[in-house]
Image (cartoon, rainbow, N blue to C red; front, side):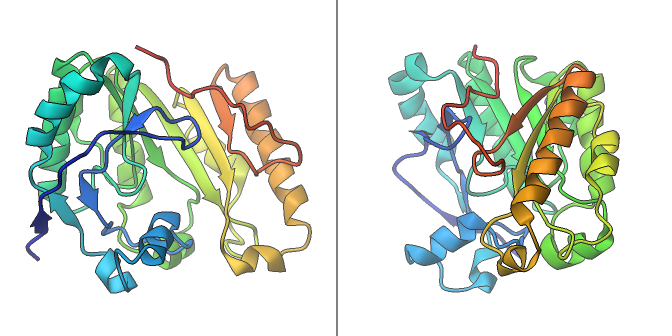
Length: 268
C-alpha cells in the first residue's frame, strides 16, 4: 500500500518525556499497531488527530522533514545534547522502506551537524547504521518472548528474533545498545513470559530500561500487581549490577520512585 505524505512547518522539539532531551517524529501514526494499549495512539485519539485503530496503523510521512531540519538545526543546535527517534511513532517501521529511507537521511543530516541520535524500534535496525556516527545509540523494545504476546499485542511489529539480531549486529560493530522492556505485562496477560529469560537473551546490550504496563484493565485483575512489578524491578537492577550494565526503571513501576531521574544517554 502506498504510504501517505504530508508537509509540516516544524519538526524538532524539546521533550519532557522521561530520559529524553530533544526529539522529532517524522512519521505520523504507526503501522506496528501495538495493542497494550499504545499511549501514543490514545493521545492521537484524544486530541482528534485520528478516529480509529485502522487509521492509526496507516502511517503518514512528513515529506519535507529534511527541509525543515535545514532551518531548525542552526536554530537549536547549541541547545541539543541528542535527538531521540521517536517518542510517538517508530523510525524503522517494519516493512515500510519509505520510512526507513527517510529515517536514515535524517540521521545522516543530524550526524553531519555533530548531533548524536538515539533510536528505539520494534522494527529492524538496518546494517547501514554501522556507517553512521559512533556516538549514536540504538535500542529495541522487547517485553516478551512468547508468540501469544506478539500476536495479540504487537501484531505488525518485527519478529523478536529479527529485532535482536539487528541490535546485536550493531553492538558487535561497537555501538552502544539498549533494550526497552516496557510495557511489561503481568502473568495473567502473558503467562509464559519470564523476566529472567528475557534478561538472559538481551544480556549483550549495554543498558536496560524497565517499565510496567499501564492503561490495560487486565493489570488490575492481577492480585498484587504492585508487588509483582517491584519484584521484577529488583531482578532487573540486580542483573544489571552483577553484569556491569546501566539500567533505568521507569517512573511509576516501583513502590518508591524518584521523578528526578538522570538521562539514560551520554551527552555529546
